[in-house]
Image 1: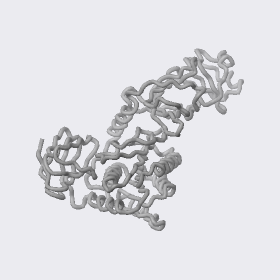
Image 2: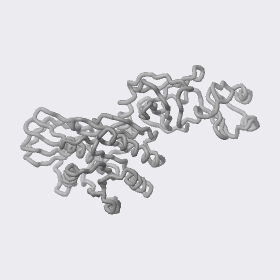
Image 3: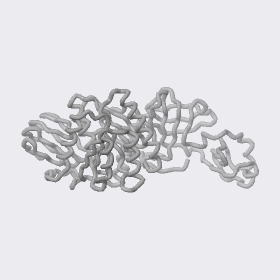
Image 4: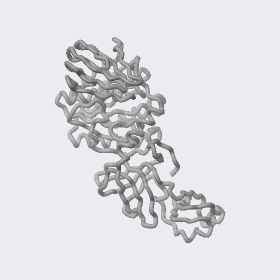
Length: 413
């Protein structure tokens, strides 16, 4: 455990996994001040810059791939701090942060939130990154805040969530923009100001960049912060609308996460929201289902099709042109079913639904994560595991199934 001495204003870049104990003096980590006797734990997938606010000593516990580096004069941290102070001293109401993957968006958002909070404001954060969600679970857009400074926005309290249902934003751009706008309006109703919107890292192709333009157009922020060299100059046009645009370079040394590391981080987030969730029984005739045609179509009398199907049919429904069948089906006669008007047939084997990632919606329109345990057609129930246990209006179903270790696989529903 090395004891590191810092002089006032000195900077260190630390890479987790690591634990830091302040022995004397005070340090600032992304706007959160830690003084003698206080400590911070740094996740293996994160890195922080530690700034001494006065002469200080820190005790560092390092394991595995922990690293301590000096901060280069060219590091954008100082520029970030200057921009954050400008925003904190302004009357800005909304700030949108855009940038590539691992360019430092979330660390910027964390620092801005802390500085605003310490200046007496009541900031809120919308986590708009469905793939690497920090405040809510993966596949959700979440509004959060806190009365205390944080080391990472994952420590913020979730106030409201909106279900997108996927960790890839590419096919849900319109829905994401709509939900961001909903939560921005909710933040205003809750008197959270300024509102900081942390977007996803999908910016390297034309659709991704156009999606970010759409977000800016709809949210109408006072400030747009752009991180990453590849986006330089691409948001300058918003200055014509009176929007402050700040550009920040990509750090020379940064911690990038592999796909496997991202998958494991999502697994941890799923566990936090679902692993200890109790069972909730929902009556199928009492909730509206979205995203699962089997439960959305018109029910078909099983006796009218059973002669053309080998096996046991528990339930069947008709969606335009498609017959959906649930049960232990060995085979079926597509020709005979076509004669009855069923052009296509989709079979779900009994138990298919177990582990499907979902959302239940309350009376206020807030979404809550769930996982389907079982559909019991005999009792007309769907059993889900969720921490939410009150009235449910909607059951929204995704194309993601969570395995026993809470990693994802994609399915066709």
